[in-house]
Length: 294
Image (cartoon, rainbow, N blue to C red; front, side, top):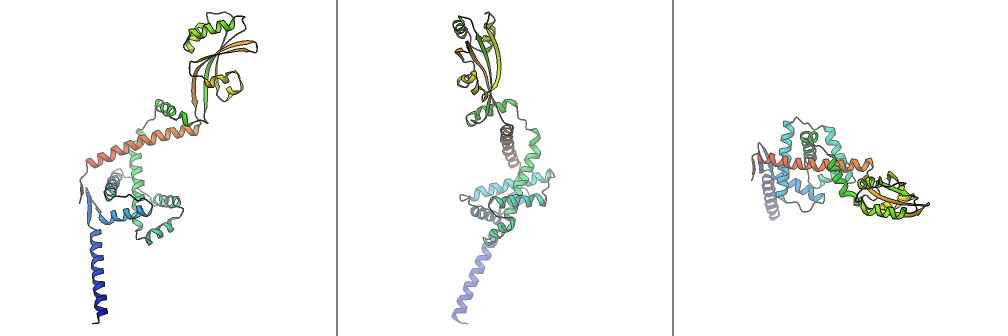
């Protein structure tokens, strides 16, 4: 046998042996979850896929933990008799590909060129759908959004809702009396809120009290334009407007949300609650499962 053939045979033998060893190692068990196993191959494929998708800092430990959770959610889905249809999976494929500016077929070709099996992405997408199905089935109907929670959420968002409209509630006192300015000042200094003001006015003659609710955008074209600069229960006197003096007190300022923004807030509150339920649930599944990491 020539030297060239001997070297070639040796290289081929070493290469074949190495490839076989790597192949065997890839299919070794990396973790056990109850009666299910997770192989090194699954972990290596997931890491490679995520890195190709641009997620650089992917640790083996994180991927193992993620696949353990997916396995537990899949078992839970079976117990709940939740099925995943071909159309659901295909739709998920198409949406995922579209976000990357491609289509399902080209995406799978792209992964295949980079030695990533189609099952790797399929299992990844399937796990996400089943997780959502389980959480929705177990907790969605139990989640309630209270009016107080909506109000608190609105309060936190006021600064970022400059384009939204406010409903202003206020009291207006007017008088043509010769001493009306003096009287209005006296009343102004005696009261602290709109309820006090309504009672105090009853002590005086020839003073008109009116209660209004207007949109803050409307107020820019009328006397209450000053209201936008007032805090609730703050007062202001306007002198000699159409031969009258006025005392204005702002009683309330409520954000009037559009239907779209109100629905957005409700959805955010719901998503936060169901996410917390899901986090607690997966921890319960882990606590009650047999998990062994090799």
